[in-house]
Image (cartoon, rainbow, N blue to C red):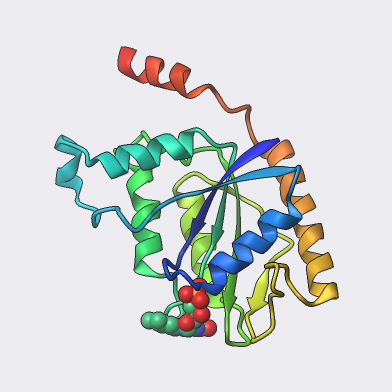
Length: 197
Ligand code: FNR
C-alpha cells in the first residue's frame, strides 16, 4: 500500500478541505495510507535558519522522504494558495539541490464554498509543484464545492455521483503513483547516505 503525505492548506479544525481529505482517505481505504503533515508549527521560511535548522523543518523533510507520494488539498485565498501552504512547500525544497520533493508523484484537490472550486489556486499549484520537483498528475481534477450537507454524518461525500467520481479519482492517483513513482528507500538508508556525504 502506498504511503501518502497529505498537506491540507487550512489549519481550521472544521476545515472543508480537511473534510475533503478525510473523505478521500475513506475512498482510498486499502489502497493508500494517508499521513497528515503538520504545517502550522513551521517557522516562516528564512534561508539563514539552515545554519541550525529548526526541528519542525527537519521533521517535515523526514516525513516527506518517508512517503511514496504527496497529496495537497487546499482552499483558495484571494485567487491563489494560502501563505501557510506556500511556506510548507518552500522549506522541503531547500537547501538548493536537496529538495525532498524530487521525483515524488503528486496530486491536488481543493474545496471552497464558491462555484470556482479553487480553480485559480490549483492553477498556481500547477506552476509551483513541477518547479520543486514533484511529478504532478494532470487529470482527473477535483474542484469541490463545499455546500451545507456536502458531507454526511460519517464524513462521506453525500452526493452519490460526486462520491463515485472521487473514487475514480483515487484509483487514477494510485495508477499515477505506480506509473511514475520510484520505490521509497528506507529512511535509515537515506539518512546514512546523506550523513556519509
Ligand atoms: C477566502 N475564500 C475564497 N474562496 C474562493 O473560492 N476564492 C478566493 O479567492 C477566496 N479568497 C479567500 C481569502 C481569504 C483570506 C479567506 C480567509 C477566504 C473563502 C475560502 O475558500 C473558504 O473560507 C474556505 O472554506 C476555506 O477553506 P477551509 O478552511 O474550509 O478548508
